[in-house]
Length: 399
Ligand code: SF4
Image (tube, helix red, strand yellow):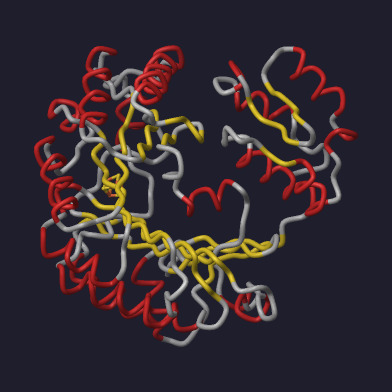
């Protein structure tokens, strides 16, 4: 039992997207990893390698169902560890999806990779199918902190991984870093950032470590065996990252993402701009014109649904206007470009300058946001206080 609703409880998502404009963004979920990291709450599973073949076949079949409705401009393969499969299996599942949907219009095709799971044969396979961007989960260049994080790779694997990507003519790559790992000093952080910058990436994602429910780290913290998060320390690490990355020409374009001009992740920009996308695979979420849904999370249950010819959908919902407005605010304010209030009004009928006049005046007075024409964006300390700003801008009738 996968714990999800039966397909009778959800609408036929294929039918409700009939006649909608073809969907320009595709997410593919590969839910397998070599080992479960102790801070990770993603839908990822270790020790289930025997399921790779069956799961890959289900992914390709789900992609076929979307033929004619998806015209992908961006594709993002995330996980899990999408490269935790041999080169042949990698080429088979990615090539199968590309063939099922026709990827003629794809401009950006990103895959997440763990430095410990990359080799030359896999990079060749990625290039053959058309992947042109890799997001490398480096997390740290210090083996002590990688050990704390329970990562399977060492710092030398990350450097080697980048060499392999370059030798294999991968056109673009991004590095992922985790900030404020327990035991990591600011000096350690600075060294990590310097190592990252020395490798000349065009893009860096730098997320402060979060303690999520149900993870081993959160259990350790509750038992007093790991320090509780310290918001001031976290901000110090984040501010240092902003400063060092900006000095290296990597501008902050989202709260935790930095890029050279033109190298921003187009796929992730689509999420932050609340665009439409289809997600395929176990637990993958989709969003089309104010309707959201997610597939069943367990990979075997997902594959079973597909094999039975059933919908893999676990739940779906129609997002009402106030909640849709909140989504625009939650996602759009993360971007330094901010949020176009005219777009929010066109999609929801909610005119923020009228419904939230008092709150906007107060936020402007405190220098937390700027409003230029109808574009609202965080400024100054507003980035550090983003959650507070968003709370003030909650539509009153939203759930
Ligand atoms: S490699 Fe990534 S997805 Fe897999 S367990 Fe670690 S953090 Fe989670």
